[in-house]
Image (cartoon, rainbow, N blue to C red; front, top):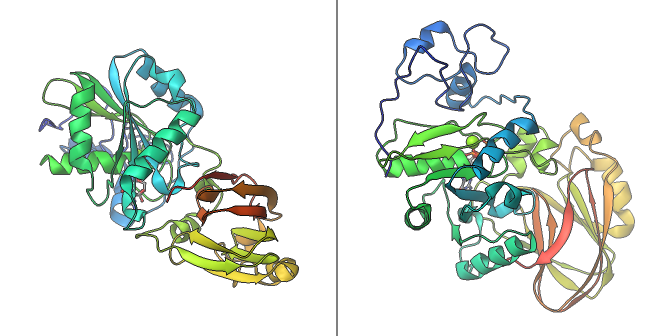
Length: 379
Ligand SMILES: Nc1nc2c(ncn2[C@@H]2O[C@H](COP(=O)(O)OP(=O)(O)OP(=O)(O)O)[C@@H](O)[C@H]2O)c(=O)[nH]1
Ligand SMILES: [Mg+2]
């Protein structure tokens, strides 16, 4: 499907970085796209920032503006193409690309749930697909199909390619989604599976890696485009430091940690969230978070004192001064009255699954800007 291309650039016109799509310049080291003049002689040109991310795992934030993303998304509505929208299954709420229906025009949409490798092994994937269809509909999007994949582990890629083939009908393909959902990793996976592994787009654990459209030519003269992710301000990754983001991002399959809670008990998720079970019967709270994120249980009456004494130390991440910057927390009161599985979602951090009939009140305290809500149970 992917054309083995000559990556050598045309030196007459502007050259784009093969890693992040930004236009290469050789003048200003401090500006995006800088590469030493000697780098232009290489067959594949990458900017200094991509070089550092690739070779030194460096964090290299760049100030991006929503206008840049909107310009690219606007272009999609006016071309005939297949839109592949990627969401992060671990952070469905925080990774939803809002307003997509406005941009796609008449084009078909394939919705890809990525990072399926993080969900528990015994999960019913058909149920997850139906759940995504339901959530998409609630948000005003009617995808032609939902596919679950793991770009990193190579799960579901054959099915994805079959669906892309089915729906694109000789058109270009645009991979879109908010930042950090794994768009570039997905394209690298496709390239790898098609023996074009020498082309590699830059990926990183931090938001804002891809800076402009990157075109990958297909055999039929059409292309797949990687695009920069738009920033959802309520993604937790924008509020914490890169080191803390590493700690709260799950790296392997999540093992839910289950706490039998009585009312007037509290759970702290590191120093990032506090969950008070204010009122209700004794319940299991199944916590789906990064496996090594510390969970501390205490009495609700002691919670304030525990936070004051231990925030940034025992209750970490975040650590030290960075912890203070997240206070005071914003409090959300959730009145729960359900008969079926329900999740309390803390965007970017994870969720708490409640089973069966639950009637009660839960208060969630999080740093300002992190969104909290209830949803139909995913699992
Ligand atoms: N667990 C898991 N992590 C993944 C998967 N796919 C991508 N990631 C990780 O998600 C992070 C972001 O990946 P990228 O491919 O750079 O994301 P992106 O959507 O291109 O991000 P931007 O370029 O910033 O818009 C990286 O740390 C990846 O390793 C997956 O299938 N499973
Ligand atoms: Mg990218």
